[in-house]
Image: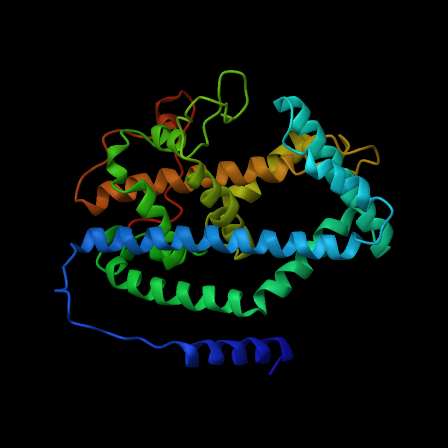
Length: 331
């Protein structure tokens, strides 16, 4: 067995041996409805993810400080950190960028590795430390227990059994989190209204909606994070059915917008500074997720035994058509 997996297995065994479950019947057990039970445990997944991110960031910060603590720039970094959140919003933003640049420089000069891969190297090491810690394994065990409970409910939902479970890259965990936030998907009258709620709409100025102090977003940041940060990459990495949309969009923009991929008009790699980092990837991923949401929206109506109230907007445009569903709802 791999030494890393062996260590994780040992930690997991020790954690389980320390758990003592005590059940008392002093207080009468109250029964929850199945849907409330589902929402409760699905929201626990969101909370577990939030806690894991917080602990990971703490660990990464401690690792970075340990690496650069003897560097000549460390004193200057600490001084800037003490005043990091003082001043106007512009001053705070400027100071944070200055701190990040100094940390990157200190890491580069200390680790003596490729400057472009310093952040990636530190993050990978921090992730390894977290994954092989008691805290990391405890979270994994907790997630497995919650997901197992959620699967019992998911297997009773037509939208999951007849559609979502067929989508490669969309497991029980992400499906539960998705449905817990969206709830009744048929409350969205059109696919575009669902896109808007998920933060995939483009404003009149050509940019996505951004958070402004004192104003409430019209979209749900949790959905945007889940779709673009987890589900989208899963579709691509696992070569899921919807990856075909990503590949088609990428092929098109490499010809029409080569700068998004840091290419010259003739398709060769550009040597100048990259002015659009990951723009092509993010654009293609966004188009892929919108297609998935369109079919999820249709599946939600089919799961209720209803026909969707309208066709996707593209059907109403001249010289356009909608390709057959990539993943069809199995009735």
